[in-house]
Image (cartoon, rainbow, N blue to C red):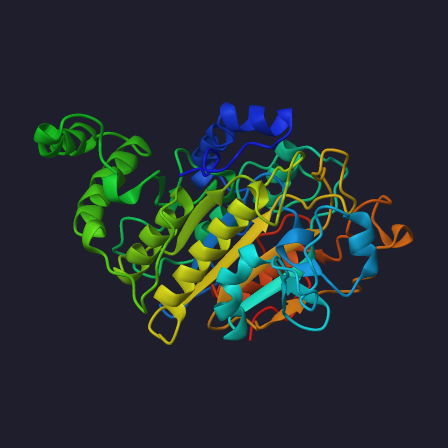
Length: 431
């Protein structure tokens, strides 16, 4: 499930080309690095044993450069309304039918994001503004690469930050055939280098291609044919057959969400519904990666009732349903969800009633042990031109890696330094 075709295409040519040629196909090659760690990465896990209490991480990539100033808007800043005469979200006290909902005395959610209000009000959703990486490129391809590998400078790294986490920590269940899943057609770079990891666009229908009548025989052939082969071919074949057996035991079709949660019938909503079913089945999966596209809004962005409104509604309602299903009033599931994009958008709208590639954006983290119910900023200044990065963007004041590193250390129980050439500073994201 890539999410690229789920929403109206308002993107730039680079993003369209990136989507059409399937960006993650390039990243799929990173899987061959699972046993080849770079010199700076410790090869021996520091933990003495598995930690069964650590969280499952659900990592969401908002591909396309999400407009943080529409996702969570600064209604108390007059500069915001000056810069966006047609795109600004109406103030909570405006009386406008499209008015936002205040989160505090400065920030608000637009109507399209109200699916996340219960989690925010429940203290389990944290919004992080001014988040990103400091790099010179405004290219989707470059920015996505840097975010996924966890470096702001090195474009030669072929393993992902989440892949390196899994490669340097003990499995929570040593017998589990699967540690991570990408709900996608190919392995995203974020999971490059991860052991026991497989992409599947739709877990309920994941199978070896061919007739259902011969599925059992084909699976048996795969196991027998590769049983005596050398690794990695042998392990890969056996992992696939074990995964098929495991997924067959999960009755996705009959899955009933808890707390009357209703997932949108979209690729992203269905992906999160499958994610909930996988987590509740307790099969040993430790990480799940999902993409959602539709964020590259150069033309007719329309966060009030148009293209971006639809994308934000799908995003917020899907994650809101996941919170109600897996986290609301239920302490049995240790889960941390993270959502981020490669960059934000310009503060000022363009002549096509859209926004162009920017710098600082917004991140979301959610879970029982996330210090939520607030908007986290660091030295955030009014959106007047002298305060903007490159004279046009929200400044990057919180590094993505600070947030992710705190989650890896405190919620995923991995003390290994997996960030090449960078020493993270925790930002109080976790309790």
